[in-house]
Image (cartoon, rainbow, N blue to C red; front, side, top):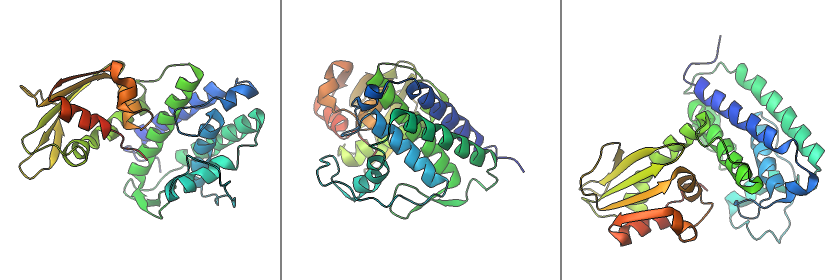
Length: 276
């Protein structure tokens, strides 16, 4: 048996992105591992620790038994407490220890994925807490998205841009766009009959329109709306940073252009973050 064709794109995207992470951090000096990233409270080391930790859980390894310090100000709820364990347990690791564990984890996960023969609809435990399950297809896409998002965190922290149009970036785009109807219709409270256009340029260019129907439900499509209620024009990297909760709209206002209903546009921007 071989890997199901519908799983291969996500596996390939994950592989390309996690190998890019390895290439980024492998030559770093010890001090560079302490550079701050846009993830609150996390350094380069912490981001890589998070990637390693989740992939180890995907391999079926038991979670570390570890008590978190009480002074981690960015740990504010049960979810952040859960994911912080895999991070904090590695904060004393040296650069060679980090790169060696990352390399070993990539080798083992790649082998696991090459031998993946389950159905795309097989239920698997989601590794980020809550005891929930996802389909295998959804889980692999989300892993590609998560690793790519953290690759971009590392690239910004290290000043090494790239891969904004990689296969995993396309998966990330589609997953972020799927969340837009709720952002506009529910979170930002757009009224029925409202249309909000998103004009995104850069390495990934796209135009999408969210329409709020009579029952207050949002839908999204690629058609051009004549005279939308509001239009947001921004570059792809800024879109990602906002949607992944890395920055607030006010701090990148110089990279965003809004047209039409300004109050609505900024209500949407303030509710733009859709990842934990």
